[in-house]
Amino acid sequence: MTKVGVLLLQLLAAQAPAPAPEAPPAEKPAVAAPRADKLPDDPDALYKLGTAFLSQNQPRRAVAPLTKLVGLTPDGVPAKVALARALRLSGDVDKAKAVLDAALAAFPEEATLRSERGLLARIQDDTDEAITQYSVATELAPQDAELRFNLGEVLQRANRTDDAIEAYREALKLDGALHVARVNLGKALAEKGLNAEAKETLREALRQKDGDAEAHYNLGVILMRENDATGAFAEYQAALKADPKHARAQNNLGVVLDGQGNARKAAEAFTRAIALDPKYAEAHFNLGLACFQLGENSRATRAFEKALMLEPRRASGPYTQLGQLYLAQGKKAQAVAAFQKAIEKSADDGKKTTEAYQGLARAYLGLGKVDEAVATLKTAVETFPDEPGTRAGYGDALKAKGDLDGAIAQYTVGLKLAPTTENRLVLAEAYAKKHVGAQAKPLYEAVLAEDPNHRGAKLGLADLLLAMGDYAAAEKLLTPAAGEEPDTGALARLGILHSRRGRPDLAVPELESVVAKDPAQLEARAELGFLYLRGGDESKAVQVLSDLLAVEPRNSLGLLYLGHTLYRQGKAKDAEKSFRGASQVDPIAGEPHFALAQLLESTGRKDEAKKEYEAAVRLQPDHADAKTALQKLVASGTP
Image (cartoon, rainbow, N blue to C red; front, side, top):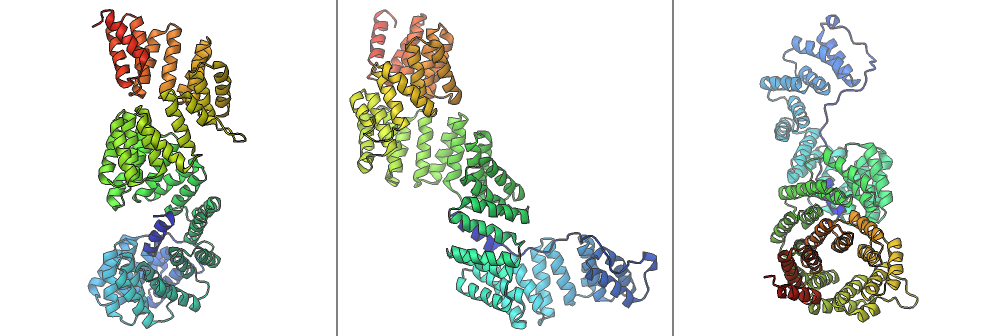
């Protein structure tokens, strides 16, 4: 589901918030508050004084006269209602509840008490109690339209949408001018998917009261659900014109802009929504998505973290997005925690997706925890057996572990499920890595038959041809046509090709040029370091290879060539460590085992050398030098 779709569902399910027991504004009394000992004894005077303070938003000042009034008139229901209201608005909810419960015990059939008790229950987030109180109140005062409306609101909040619709309709029968009931009826109808009736209801509300922000906003939500972005945008603008502080309308303007591909303007809209309501988690989350698209990863991370701090029980999506951001920033441990939370949340909300599993596996791989990555993706494949992306991710993890057969099996299933170019290429690369050119080459050629200029297929096939020793075919494939823009990837491979053909005079300047333009060409950097070594410049070779491994410590070719350089410098122990590192990083490559075997043999460790020669031949049966060296070692008497 698209981001817009998710947002719409969340907004349409949202209920009007219950009044919060906030402290009243700074008091600027128009009526002076007498001292407690100077309060009048006349009930009428006390009632007028208390209600005057309430009308002036000074509920704390209203408590004393109303408390005295209740003491003087224990049977006075209006005094009890007013006192409970003053206590509620002063933030003393427990005392308000005590007053109301005591009053209801004495006067159970007073609708005004029931209404005030229902409102208090809403504030305490006790929806069941609020429904009970409002239901009884409507039975006691069947002609009170506002009570019906209040009942509809709490029913809607409890997701009893059919009952809420009925309550709103009854309220409008009693009072057709009760505008807020019509707006809420439109929203409730939309929640039921009755969009046509919902739109007509909201438009009728706007005909009755032009410029109503909530009616415009809810109409915009419905139009956005129907993919009418232009109409939705106009309604959100109208809502903001009516109420410039309408944070949800400002947020949804951003959603429309994002859907139109304008992430920058969308981010500005989300920022304005947050300025209007700093605790608006949805706007923080949407800002994170927009910043992610803009490449502003640090800002996106902060936005996602804020959204999750405000709503820690959110569904899995934000945690997945946060995990992706952590990965992009190299924060692998934090990414693991975020993806684990996403998977946990997806189990709770029933919205399992493969993205969190794949992200968690990538984070584990980044930490070198290959077994954990494999286990994660094994679970993902069992959960989503027909998901090609999961198969590909599992194959990647198996390949990283050195299980090429297992990886090929997963890639093969993935290709059957989705015969895409990408899936062909990953399978071809796996076969190439296993040195099964007969399987890899047709896959590369199939991609190039469809798209002769496909960069990935062209470079992959070139690598295969280089590994097979077919330098002529590789050179033909890599050489740019006349007038064609040179590709650094192709030029890097041409430099490597010339190096392997014994043409350092061509290879060195080519590779130096590539590395200067594109330092991300790691294989070119490794080959250049080895060329420096072969040219006798050991210090330069060490510098180039060390710089490469500082960027990517698991580069097998860099480790192999650094081992050769260190051995040349007489640092056998360090060289051995580097060769072993290369074989661990690329467990199916024969060359690191061959290099290690030569080192071991030269230092008199012939039994160990024999095992390494055997490993080289097993992994790379066409390795002629390894075969010859093994035969000589055996002939010399090594068992």
